[in-house]
Length: 264
Image (tube, rainbow, N blue to C red; front, side, top):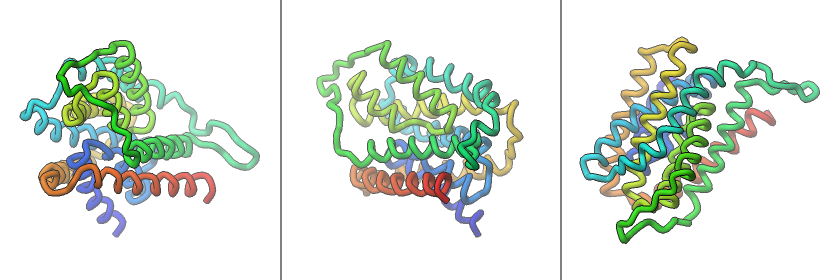
């Protein structure tokens, strides 16, 4: 029964990406770990492929509308690509299974990943719930702060590599603040960046993990169906209200993961 629910929620992952341009990875890892029983390290690899593939399909819609800024994507993406690939290829395999021990409490690699992911979820929920919107370049003049954009790409790439999160909640504010992209263009550009760096990160896992391709392609296919549904629903559902509701849901999930992994 939980397996059926897990596959059904794959569609919800795509709907989230289609409606608000993010949140897919926030749902993917808990579904894979808690509902489908896949260990966290392999789940982060699967999350990269699912979110990357789904975001790539979603970005095509924005490309057709001219809502992708390729120059910004390249500036942000290059350091991000390097960081995520090196993290998945070399850093993750080098982390020991048991990190340290506090009395009788053993902090394992899997536990650390889930706790870090929960902290990422807390940041994501804050970004979604708050109404603070940075001012975009309505006059059409874009400002490129190259060092800051590259540094942000490096940080997001490393974070993506460790927890398998696409980082849309970090990328979109960065694009609006540092480049002053209009919000819709920031979402489209973010989807393209998420797609590229997630799939590149997954390539770093191919030699390190045993991939169940039948499962992964089925799950990803359902997520892609979801992004088409989500894109269609944008005509009828206000994105701002949905984003805030999703933020509260993510907050609840983060608290649940912290309680389950640390307290229970």
